[in-house]
Amino acid sequence: MSVLDFDVLIVGSGLAGLSAALHLAPTHRVAILTKRMLGDGSSGWAQGGIAAVMDKDDSFQAHVDDTLVAGAGLSDPAATRFVVEHAPESIAWLQSLGVPFTEDDGHLHLTREGGHSARRIVHVTDATGAAVQQTLIRRVKQEPNITLLEHHMLVDLIIASKLGHEAERCLGLYALDETTDEVLTFRAPHTILATGGAGKVYLYTTNPDTSTGDGIAVAWRAGCRVTNMEFIQFHPTCLYHPHVKNFLISEAVRGEGGQLKLPDGTRFMPNHDPRLELAPRDVVARAIDFEMKKHGLDCVLLDISHQPPEFVKEHFPNIHARCLDLGIDITREPIPVVPAAHYTCGGIHTDLSGRTDLPGLHAIGETAYTGLHGANRLASNSLVECMVFARSAANDILATQLALPPAVPPWDDSRVTDPDETVVISHNWDELRRFMWDYVGIVRTNKRLDRAAHRIKLLQEEIQEFYSAFHVTRDLLELRNLVTVAELIVRSAQARHESRGLHFSRDYPQMAEVAVPTTLVP
Image 1 (spheres, rainbow, N blue to C red):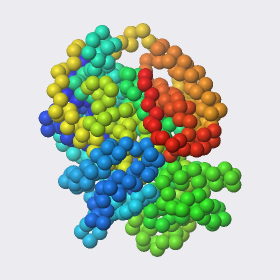
Image 2: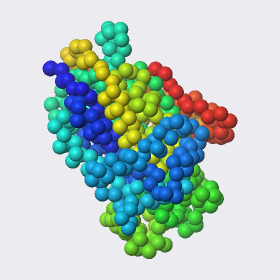
Image 3: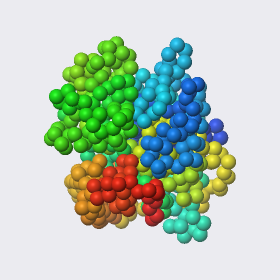
Image 4: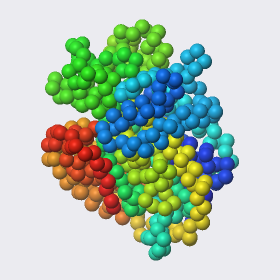
């Protein structure tokens, strides 16, 4: 097979990847590789909106302060200010592309979400991510310099040192083309990982099936540091329904007056935090988890029915319609909800230009650790992070002249065969997600983490044996990556001898005086 050459390889087609591609397309030949269809990542699922200071009564400092409070002492002040100050220009850029943001009297309508001290959430009703994603997809399809490669699953990065070169750098990548079942070889001076998070490592998640931590795992194998992987955000309010998985009930429902209740109608947030339903997500998720365990409940209730029906339908048309399809009229009755794994706050360690430890490799979006989110992500800070660092990484690439990498070998699968049975993959996948939910979830203990680490080691041995002997498939590659990410989460959690933000340990219930990130080095 011939080697496919580009100026920039972008893995992932969410808001981060598509934004970077559009910034680079005027001058660079860009390939976007995505393992399913263009719109199948997490970005399109984002309901609430994008946090940016757009009101005269708001300020950059207030947005910075809210982010630092939510981050529980671990958000990097420089990264936080960098994102906050570049947020308004990101909104303006999306407006210039034609994103139809909701307006009020000719101005952007701003809503408020948990942890924010002001209304600063720019949105498209309650389907912001979908509207932004559709707009960007239309734009990238019009760019002659962008090659779109759907159903291409990242296998691994190509690293100079493994080919005997002295100067370490990323030379490109191998990707499985699922339409032909062949592993293709891609070469480029620059590679951007924009592969999203790792929510599928847990049994219950708001994430789509694509969120398997691919970028984090391949960067770790390539020698990059990862930071703060113990901080997995559990969204407090995922719809609890036997026929639906992953449907998120937006933070904005609580922002507009939604109340959390027990089955008997009692509100319980007053017992947990003075900010009530507008407390940060980690506080609300732990409160729900506590009440469910205390009362033996399968779910709790989120009630917005005290608001006028017209108000509910106008502000949450998609949530209203989806629930109505399932027999729940949210204008008249509460919504059953449970916490679910939602966002990976840690990731590949990067600087403010999106550079990783490996020259030629950038990481942006949920797969990266920029320092913004700290120990807990503030609501609606994720989409803006994608855009700010997409532009920053693109500018860095535009300013950096790298020669075309030296020759790289094609993928060699001459010594492997077709798998005789794949039940090993499906069984291991299910086992991993169940014990991660039970042992490494919202509340952790040393014993639970040790049990998880022991099982991960056994799974890794089985998966490596399978990977070495058989042709790769997407299921195998995703499982391999998920097990790697699970190990990183557990190792990071074991290293943190305190409770902070999203990491709550019964063995170390107090917060340490000094906040220190958890950085793992390969």
